[in-house]
Image 1 (cartoon, rainbow, N blue to C red):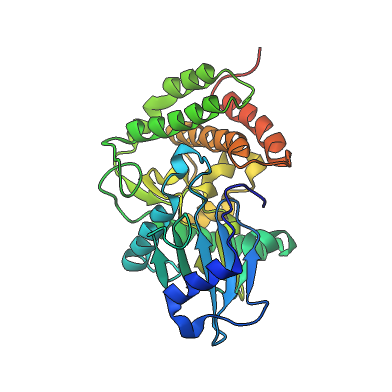
Image 2 (tube, helix red, strand yellow; image 1 turned 180 degrees about the vertical axis):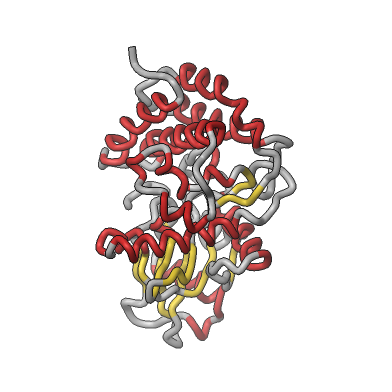
Length: 328
């Protein structure tokens, strides 16, 4: 996916990064040792073959001069923190971090190296799989997601803070940040921004049911899942994690909005039964948060293709209807 947030670097800079991470003896020679991995929507990632033939991935944060949405500030730092949490406190398969550099000396952004995972991206192959096979993988994902959510946090909000004492405070702050981002860039969301604020305020009481902060990935879609031999072997892209309500996880989205797919296999694997009325209200608020981001981020990413905006705008109408607001 093309985006102005992708911080591409010259071969010379890539070589300097490799030398800093692995030593001069691992700097590759010749051509064809680096190729861009094109499935990401935010960071740029390169598949790199080192001098000894080992393959690694280099992930580089957006350029310092590119404006990103408020919730995306410090995303790479969040990913590194989350990877450490998952490696030390769960058995969830995640990449190792070979080397991370936040000095901004070689380029204007943070970057890190990790081993290349030789596996298929589930988001790419899902539609080609038999339904039963795909369902098994989504059940596996549900089980892994539950394990991720077993990690308790010291507060609600980003891992490094600022933290909030309650989930209501954290989530209403998160959604307000998104609305302010949209207003700042004049994004047409099809609704008055204050109408969206009013809907959130009307339903915010449902958030008080959440009293324990848990680590959530939020962005754990099939495209962040690597599979081999009908088994999940790695979960990637942890840059949007925070401490909050597990029900906000991507796998639950389809329980309220069919356009996001069938949540049944994921929920079976997770071990979550039918949602209560209050849980449904919360999940609908989370759908609203998601589609607001999908609409507004198209401006921040500089998309020239309107496909995402055109798809997400009607979903925003659906989310508002689920929360009791329809167009007059």
